[in-house]
Image (cartoon, rainbow, N blue to C red; front, top):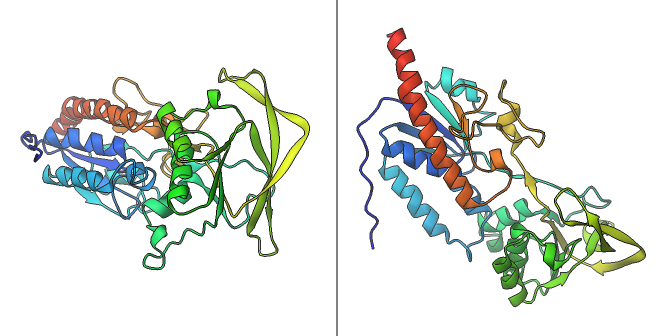
Length: 346
């Protein structure tokens, strides 16, 4: 049935900028709009949703759901601005000084891909999971040349890693017509960080799982296009800092596999553009923003953050929950701190 829109509280006169339209940003925007605040969402890409549209495949989350939810936000009065790269077009500080916002929420996520640093990683046909999924999900690379961004995948595809994102890459490659799809993971199935449900779905789709296997070199031809990968067989040793047994190379146990494409799904870190361009913003050693967990305020008064940019890559549900906590913190800050400040300067 039709969604009944919540009633918006009377206008407060306060303006809030949301950087990023992923799950954390959208949840924060919804809560603040319902409380009567003027909310503007700044999105770097040309469509809203963040990881909901560029990272999660259609077969797991239909894009129509995200479009409908954003439409509901706009009915609440939320303004969406696309192709706005905060950190380039405007800084966080300028959102206060030039655009007259009273508070800012940073929800830029964890979209910086990690690579292995092995020889041949710069060959054509090596993708990060982020780029591969973005080309398919957001840029509609499966429909080239009707759309501008191709996905040159070939018949034989390998994905390195065994988390939820790696499962999305494996199953997407299968749907795009790859004849052979291989998962390379340096530990065993028992240590796989993917949800069991996602792992089982991939197994049902006849993905070739190569456990205890780690790439050590990617081969390319004279045109620098991927032709294959050398794989090191591993065994499990003593537990590492994560509590999982550390994979150790088995001496003399290597073999080659012919490939057309290899996708690195070994994790991603916080997007650095906003954090590196914002003076006085406290970060932890991984580059995530440090916040007060009760209010989600950062080291800068009036600047809040939540989602993967704070926690590192996590789940949509956790990011949305953080957005709701941040909205409470922002609402309290506006009503108790900004209102007093404005009254004093009036």
